[in-house]
Length: 94
Image 1 (cartoon, rainbow, N blue to C red):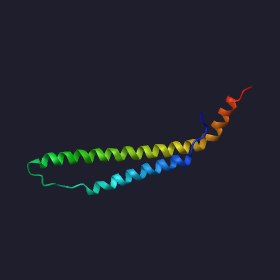
Image 2 (image 1 turned 120 degrees about the vertical axis):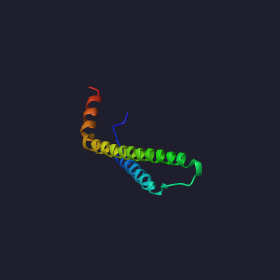
Image 3 (image 1 turned 45 degrees about the vertical axis):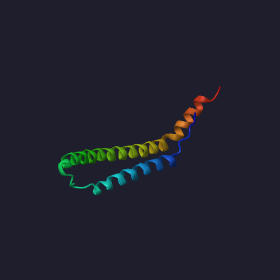
């Protein structure tokens, strides 16, 4: 068991997730507003609508995970030393 949390790694993970969410969100501008698919146009537009909705939900989830990782890192940073001291004291043989 380790008592060490690598805050730099957590911050990099959070930033990477945040960037991925932003990149994915900005890609929505490239979705076509209409297609010429002949008789298949309604089906194609339905598929695009579903993909767009699912992508939006993924963006929300990725950003929430990024915020969660950042929050966990900040919480660890605030409480890490006191918690480690308490664990070390509890694990010392008497």
